[in-house]
Length: 95
Image (cartoon, rainbow, N blue to C red):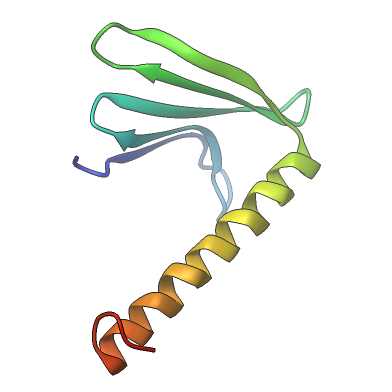
């Protein structure tokens, strides 16, 4: 897995460009795509198999759902980070 992330921008007129689409390789041949919809102020989400180009899931994320997702991913990141620190400091399998 290459852990590829591609961000396509639409507006470079200010110091904070607008991200129109983010593509993230979740696993080999599995691509997560997030497309920003400026008029509806939400994000379309889709996951597809890149070999067959078959979309396996799709939906819409509004601001509340994005915030919940960010909090959940932050919690997981912190747990992984803590496990890594514990393993590094005390040896694998020890706490």
